[in-house]
Amino acid sequence: MEESPNQERLIKRLKWWCLVAVFLLALLSPLGTFVFWILSGTITYLVFLIFYFSPRKEQKVEYSKHERSTEPINLKVWIIATVIFIAGLSLVGVFVFPIQSDSYDFIETVTEELRNPKADSLVDAGILFHKRQQYDDARRLYDEALAIDGQNKYALYNKALSYYSQQDYQRSIKLCHACLSYHPTYGYANYLLGDNYLSIQNYDSALICLEFAYQQGVPDTALAVNLGEVHAKKSNINDAVRYYEEALQQDSTLVDVYERLAELRPNKSTTYRQLALKWKKP
Image (cartoon, rainbow, N blue to C red):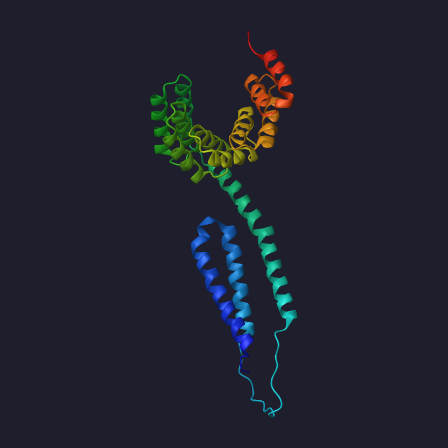
């Protein structure tokens, strides 16, 4: 059959959209599997539509001069194809992404099972030096552990912590990223990375890292305090108050938090200042 002008324009438009989707797939696929599957599904859908609406060879049919062939695009086909496309994406969301999340947990479990006892002993010794503020000696032991196991998350994390303790935030950030490249769900590395960003006043990055650590269930009152501080810096007052009050639920003696809440909630400043005086050390 011959292409009608409307059909020809539709096919050209579909081909253009398909090329755009292929370009976006090449450009954005490094962002993760979610983007990859969405764009791949879109490309598949567009290719299907291009194939469906393309003309096919048929037996020639004679029409009188008063007749013409009218073959409007079937709306039902559009609806069915769209439903199939959405259902396919839903299946991807339900089955693929939970599997990806589980695979991270599986990788972490396998990593834990393959930990090298000698490397762990060196890390433990390094932590003792760290507690005595002998950071160079601590890092020497962490480096020895990393020479044995280059992906040891405790060696990478504690080495980053040693630089953070000396306010060398850039080196600490670099090591946090190295740790997270091997262990993306390690909450404490995200927590430390967020603290680094908070220290250099990069509040957007700090918020992302600290909230991820919070979602990973890092049991630390200071994490809630830091989240409150970041939200306060970004003028998210309600969120700041929520995290500060959560920190007080874990530890009601936090004088600085009471004083911060007094600043953020002037209508209750008297109550907060009285609580701060109650817990302030003589």
